[in-house]
Length: 264
Image (cartoon, rainbow, N blue to C red; front, side, top):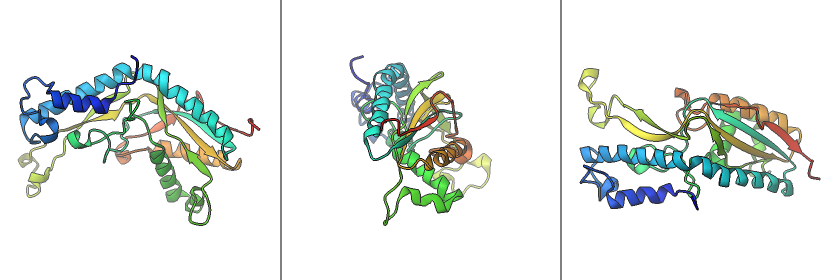
């Protein structure tokens, strides 16, 4: 493999070329076909299978050739920034993980999106999602500490990098299905035997995937504090549908440490 598989291009190619047997309606394909047609639903299933197979087939090589070196270089670059300290944490998903389901890749087709890196073609956790989850946890539990993120009067005391997968147990990308009981056409039906559940299928990050997180700090006093907040946040879950058990993570211990001032 000379370059990472571009999942974005693959989806557009599959839709344009009509690579779906028995799906004649899909050449305006999944993007223009009526969502309640059999052809559209069959096309969705095949597209999801294709997407999962493409990612899982190439994921290990992409991780080794691109993600791990990028994380190493990024960590080294922090030594030359205004941040003198950093947390380097690896954590494994204890349940399936959904990141950016409201607007990620596949939202148009699957109704539920997922963050896929535009160059590497594999799922990752953007720094904005990590920082947002961390800030939400601190706001809800330690509101007086939220000032570390900065405000109109002071600059923030930490920076968060994108988190990439560095290993996984069985697969990186998985499929998920949700069957809403009450769809838009059933709002006036109150008896469950009268409704017509329509399964919603979509991609998600699998259980057993290890991510590497890097957080830069400009204060040594913050290291233990942020580590404790971060670990507590991971136990509660990151991403979407955490109240249903999605997004729970735990440190795997292989690279969970703090560093600082060793470059000076």
